[in-house]
Each structure stands twice: as structure tokens, then as C-alpha cells.
Amino acid sequence: MTDKLKEKIKKIKVLAMDVDGVLTNGKIVLDNKGNELKYFDVQDGYGIAVIRRAGIKTAIISARSAGAVTSRAADLNIDKVFQDAYPKTVAYSKLLKELKVSSDEVCFVGDDLPDIVLLEKVGFAVAVKNAASEVKRSADYVTKKQGGDGAIREVVELILKTQGKWKNILN
Image (cartoon, rainbow, N blue to C red; front, side, top):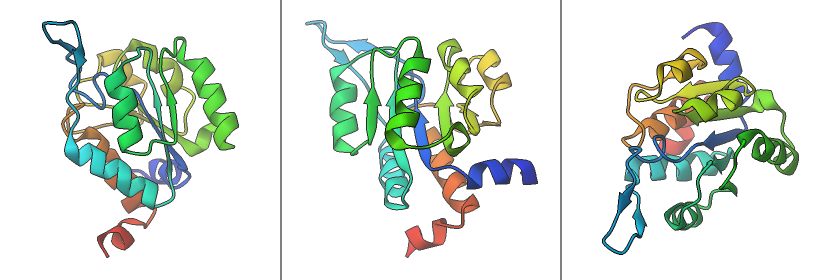
């Protein structure tokens, strides 16, 4: 990792994430009654709990809206949840204002074209392994893990280790 990237990561005070393809594997499952189901990774969830314990705020910015996201966000005590956020820049501006942070203090994790506009604004831009190639080109870092399969946990560990907070978590 370059010194420039380490400096970007050390400034992070907010971890913001897309949902479909990032917190989930990107598949939308409908049951026979039309109810939407999503699969979330337990290690990603624990990572979110850990990063919050380390003093970093969390946020969801999703262009779609789903009850499963509302439930999961409440379960994980996500600080800010923006659904039906299209374009995502409006929600992002609210996030900065409400959490009183600047763009260089935000990490955003995305996977698809609507995420590029945010990846180009934030201090630490992350694309998941399964992201569109254009998204990967806009990122400072591409995860080794797929979205919905530990990518967020990977990002959490990277941030906390770079900021020197990981050892406190282990204790």
C-alpha cells in the first residue's frame, strides 16, 4: 500500500456503503408473494459493529428501497440510512452536513455505475471485487472479497489497521 493511500485511509471518519452488490451479493430474491429477500454476510455485520465501536460512523446510500435494508440497518445501528437515493449526490450532501464531515473523511464502497459519482468525491473510494470495470477504475482500492461475501469486513479491517485501531478491537 502506498503512503498516499495510507494517508487517505487515516482521515476516514465515515464508512458509507451501497447495498445491492456490496452488502449483498447483488441478487434480488422474490418469494411467491412478491416479498423481496436479501442475504447479508454475518462477518460484514460484525465488521460494521466493530468499526462503529472504534468511533467511525456508518451510512447506507442506496438508489433502491427495501424493508430488508431498513431492518438490517436498524439491527446494526447504522448511523444514517438513505434509500431511494437517486441521484446519490443529494443523499451524500445530506450525509456530509448531518455528520459534520468533509469528503476527504468519507470512505464509500460501491459496485455499479450510479456509485461512480460518489467514488469520485470521497477521500477513500472502494470498489468490491464484483464491481463493474468502470467502477473499479474510479476506486482507490478494489476488495479481494465479493460484495455480500466479506468485502465490507475487509474494508473495515483495512481502515482500522491503517488507523492503528485494530489491536484495541482484538483486546
